[in-house]
Image (cartoon, rainbow, N blue to C red; front, side, top):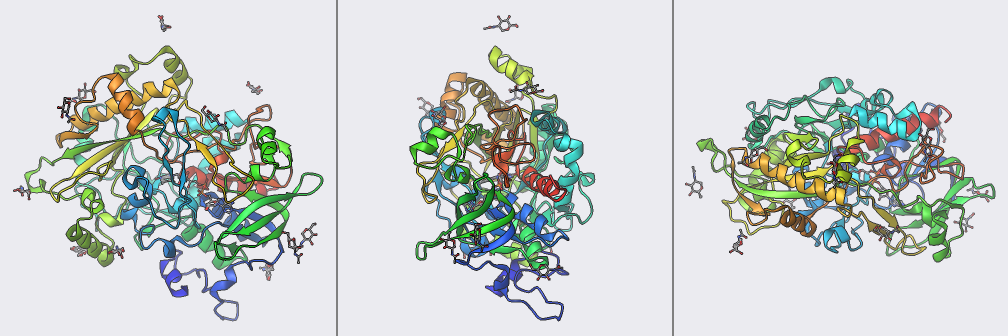
Length: 623
Ligand SMILES: Cc1cc2nc3c(=O)[nH]c(=O)nc-3n(C[C@H](O)[C@H](O)[C@H](O)COP(=O)(O)OP(=O)(O)OC[C@H]3O[C@@H](n4cnc5c(N)ncnc54)[C@H](O)[C@@H]3O)c2cc1C
Ligand SMILES: *[C@@H]1O[C@H](CO)[C@@H](O)[C@H](O)[C@H]1NC(C)=O
Ligand SMILES: *[C@@H]1O[C@H](CO)[C@@H](O)[C@H](O)[C@H]1NC(C)=O
Ligand SMILES: *[C@@H]1O[C@H](CO)[C@@H](O)[C@H](O)[C@H]1NC(C)=O
Ligand SMILES: *[C@@H]1O[C@H](CO)[C@@H](O)[C@H](O)[C@H]1NC(C)=O
Ligand SMILES: *[C@@H]1O[C@H](CO)[C@@H](O)[C@H](O)[C@H]1NC(C)=O
Ligand SMILES: *[C@@H]1O[C@H](CO)[C@@H](O)[C@H](O)[C@H]1NC(C)=O
Ligand SMILES: *[C@@H]1O[C@H](CO)[C@@H](O)[C@H](O)[C@H]1NC(C)=O
Ligand SMILES: *[C@@H]1O[C@H](CO)[C@@H](O)[C@H](O)[C@H]1NC(C)=O
Ligand SMILES: *[C@@H]1O[C@H](CO)[C@@H](O)[C@H](O)[C@H]1NC(C)=O
Ligand SMILES: *[C@@H]1O[C@H](CO)[C@@H](O)[C@H](O)[C@H]1NC(C)=O
Ligand SMILES: *[C@@H]1O[C@H](CO)[C@@H](O)[C@H](O)[C@H]1NC(C)=O
């Protein structure tokens, strides 16, 4: 165990890792010293519930502060590197956890909560698999690793919405930079004919521990897709991290370029803190209740072990603050809509009707194309489709390349080359209702309405032969009007929440979704590589047929935010203030994507790291 974790660590070799920190006398500390003692009531300055994307980041920043605060991280799961074979570490296997349309309902994983949505009216009453990482690293250990920052206007809108300049582009850009370290494409390992444009200025040299790079592989379809986007008038832009999104570029990824493995908040922030601070990790532990004193100050957390075989409860005291990075815990602790709490006999601490409401997500769809490259020499190129289909010979070749020198498809996410962002063109807007047009008119000029994401896989499990290769083009709506919600189903932490993203329920999203599908088709068929559309296929053509197909086949990209959203002081639907402090109590913050005021118009992970950096900064400066 100790040896394995050291090998997996991506912390620079000058730093120690969990388990090999040296005392001043040069004595190697035990692996177990980084972990809390289960069952022993203890006191920490800060208790972070949820060792996920945001939780590990803020816990590490607090623990690494020169003030030497004591910090505990309570995490439902454990180390994903040991729980899921090699599937969560190898970038090219990310589709196993991240592409829901691929894994379908039969998804066996020890690092996922295994949640499902309630029947979704907008999706023909389907109940969809709702992936959320249950592991140190949280969803940063389950996701597709795409790293892109929002637009300038969307962050300035965030600041305006919550009434605090703390969140403007100018004031958040340093925090985005602080969290990560960027490595440009390595053309010793990537085919030079494939040009990856990037924005090196969006990163500082050797800043934070999160590793951002490109993987050592770029799919062969990239140049053909680029030609089509050029033909359609999309602008080529240098990367997706400088505050401009309208245009197209290749997405950067959270991959450690040396090891060729996933860089998560566990391999980055948590490892850094474990080696250099007194942080204590409590794995396989659920925060089951926040404890308040008579003046409604959060003073601690009740913990229940997350183990079928050994169940017990104890508590930790927080002398400074409790930070929740873990979903529905507020309601179980008495903070939420009073009627719901009373229904489950949970004593009401604060009646906050906004808890669980205001969820925004990006409705998603994926179309598949059978393709062929016009360059005759490459006609029989083999793609990720074959990996996913279980082509043994191809998989063995990929494994060899990857283990030899971190090259080939497995070193990358197998997608994301030339992702394009746009506001829908007039050719699509002409079909929008006035309500849709009025709604979209309110967004800042640089805020995209959709992005189009290429992947090396067929989007739906298909009967594949070794000759079959598909490209899928996904689209996500980034100015969604549908608002989702979630709530508890009992007072017990072990019962799953009821999740209702409400995708496509709003007619304004239906207009946009049909437009997005038509735009995917335009991109696909303006390229020279597509032979035919496999899904939805030529029979789905009228706007009514397209909408019907989307309801039956619409998918999800798991970018939900805002179930405990931040708001200005006069916003009665807000759950936390502009510094993530829960309204109506003291000593308690929510620091994760649920506290965002809205879903940013791109991939959210970069903003989750930024958010944790910013709130750590706020706490350490006394706010
Ligand atoms: C399949 C998938 C693919 C995605 N792809 C991308 C992508 O390519 N790019 C991108 O930018 N974003 C992507 N996202 C979104 C992104 O990963 C999430 O928005 C982000 O990681 C959420 O971070 P978080 O800190 O809010 O929550 P999480 O990282 O999910 O953390 C929550 C943590 O709390 C723990 N927890 C929950 N309840 C308790 C409890 N009671 N006690 C103790 N611990 C608890 C969980 O185990 C988990 O570790 C994807 C998400 C998924 C699920
Ligand atoms: C935690 O706080 C409670 C209430 O103030 C107190 O009774 C208890 O002794 C404290 N526990 C520890 C370990 O300090
Ligand atoms: C930090 O605090 C711990 C006790 O919590 C103590 O053992 C250690 O010496 C302190 N380190 C520094 C650098 O002050
Ligand atoms: C530890 O905390 C629990 C509450 O979670 C309490 O019931 C128990 O008495 C405490 N144990 C000690 C030794 O203080
Ligand atoms: C591609 O593969 C098919 C099936 O194996 C074969 O019939 C065809 O000749 C190949 N084409 C080229 C250009 O190699
Ligand atoms: C991942 O594990 C599987 C199953 O053990 C194995 O077949 C595959 O080669 C491994 N992949 C790599 C890159 O090591
Ligand atoms: C990586 O290893 C493979 C063999 O698995 C080899 O074909 C390839 O040339 C190597 N690439 C580099 C850049 O060394
Ligand atoms: C939509 O708006 C246009 C111009 O503002 C107006 O002419 C038209 O009547 C409106 N249509 C509907 C259905 O309200
Ligand atoms: C969630 O939204 C759906 C659709 O609007 C609604 O039917 C349901 O009652 C809502 N649930 C909660 C808990 O708000
Ligand atoms: C190419 O794109 C244009 C502009 O959107 C579209 O009108 C046309 O139908 C597309 N061509 C094909 C073959 O789909
Ligand atoms: C399209 O519809 C026709 C008539 O219903 C059917 O024969 C054909 O198989 C369909 N094609 C596809 C690709 O589904
Ligand atoms: C809150 O105050 C701001 C600025 O004072 C105002 O623009 C906004 O409309 C108010 N919001 C609500 C919900 O009252």
